[in-house]
Image 1 (cartoon, rainbow, N blue to C red):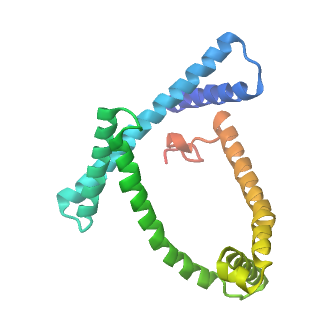
Image 2 (image 1 turned 180 degrees about the vertical axis):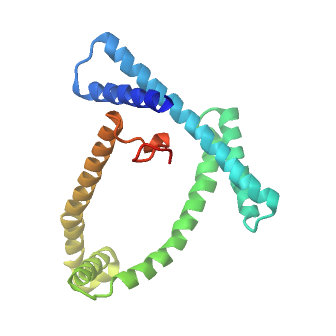
Image 3 (image 1 turned 90 degrees about the vertical axis):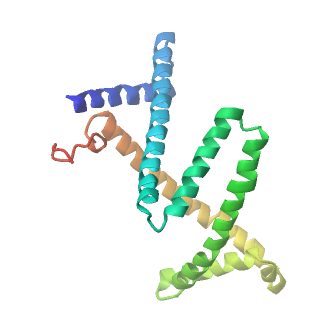
Length: 213
């Protein structure tokens, strides 16, 4: 019964969102669509709360059991609590406390994290750039030209390297990315349509055969 109710609500919400984008709605219908959007925001807020509770439960168990990662879990929970309290006390992102959290802590941690990632990226690029076949050879040549076009030594070797690197990024790379995004959009549309008409029920805990997953 609950699955049927959930399917009905999914159908109403999906049709309401589609109607908002493709139809000229009457004032009453527009109000209904606005109510659906408000409900979606409320559900998202509750989902955020559930995620926070899950985070506390998971890392709280690590801290209580003396897990080897307990210090990191403690830092994570303290940071989340501190950020939430700063938002509740100061109430906006223009306060000095919020600016300190984002510019002095979060941005600094992001910079350090991505600085470490560059070594893993170089290692992965070295393994991927081995020209074992034609596809790998094209990948190797393209990557080398792009790198030479984005470093000063490339322009010093040959002045055309920056232009070649820019062309690779703006023409073949952009075309490939658009193809990937179009494919992802079509898959998202197909999944959304299956949810709206009730064919996709895995998010209700129901498997393909109709039983509980």
